[in-house]
Length: 387
Image (cartoon, rainbow, N blue to C red):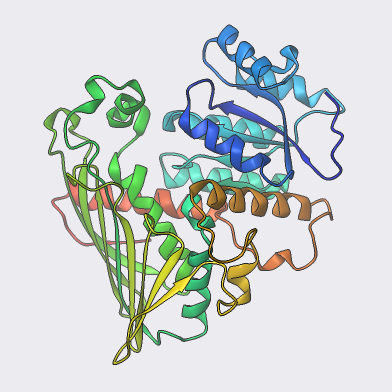
């Protein structure tokens, strides 16, 4: 299959095969705006099953590969070979696949966590810089328009000096040992595949990254974390954790990461409190941002409206009044990844340099945060210096 779309990035996938929920989200997002074109994949640990799935997706059978190394080597020899790859595999494979992709001069979009240790993340950062390649990390909620609105509000001083950062991602779907019957959950609570944490790395890093997008000027100086395994068979990995943080401007922060918040559908919320006003966002109502000025009625800002800052409307497709959800947020990120990749080729649209995206530094900071949380918790929930 030759690439016939001008400017479309020839794209492959590792993982995300038949029945993979996250694989479907990646493909829907990447293909939404015709900025990527799927031409190859190593979709499954079973080569025949992966090849059959590739054919079902409309790919040539010969480009449904048995493993990622075969794909990288073969595609490198083709004049129409892949230029970028997405990694949608269990956590313990991310580092090796990402490193191999960069060594084959491919741009990378990787599931989080990027890897297990800060040392590994720094190695990937160095390699990406040496090769001149983009590494994007799928902190998908950062693609919601109201997150960008919140970022600009803080930058413009609408809240005043930031004092308190309250973050949570606390759902209830794993309040019982569901992994006993669900293979897609089982690996997440196994240290061999998940790494040193469960909910801290799997969900806690999502609101953490949103806070980094909105508050890029704040730096964590130290933190204290306590973690629990309420479903005891998950030990030593936690299914609940509370983290306290101190920032370099004197602000304080909290992160509640939990999979045992019984009754909660999703429970990802953030509230940022400034000296003049506060903002609050909830991912179950992602099209709204609550803006609360002290002494005035609460204002609910709506996605797509003209009163939002211009930066919050760059990704807008359908205007106000129409709700957008997770697929649009991921598509926004994939479009930003594409603009960043095309920027290296001189093909990015003018003005797109204002778009932010979770790159290699976001992946590194997520790994750093988890590493410090685990270090604090395992020492008895003590304060530890962050860097």
